[in-house]
Image (cartoon, rainbow, N blue to C red; front, side, top):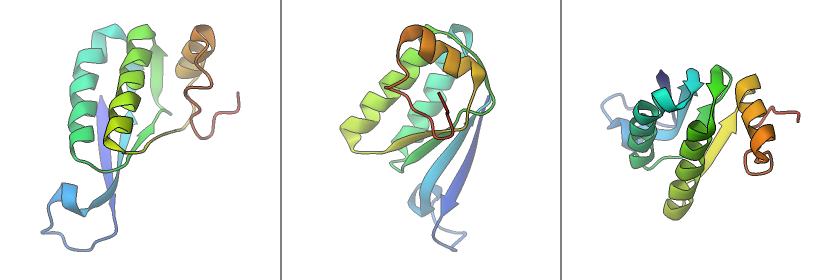
Length: 115
């Protein structure tokens, strides 16, 4: 399940959400496993299409497998092509374990991660 929260610098409630948002915060609740990766991919791709910086909160991410890590790598690549920043925040034991096992700690360094 993905929960979104937009942060904005504008006070105009009639403004289009994508136009008003200065940043889109996505709470990746549950896991990043192959069984959920298709739905998560659709949601993250739609968020990327909004054209605003993305912050992905990893705090509530449970289990993570290689499909989930691959999804986030692809998202990073696509965002870089568009010149859009993506920031990972929070700490998840499942995500940290997957990064350590796959040797991708340096590629993903979520804010708040100690390791």
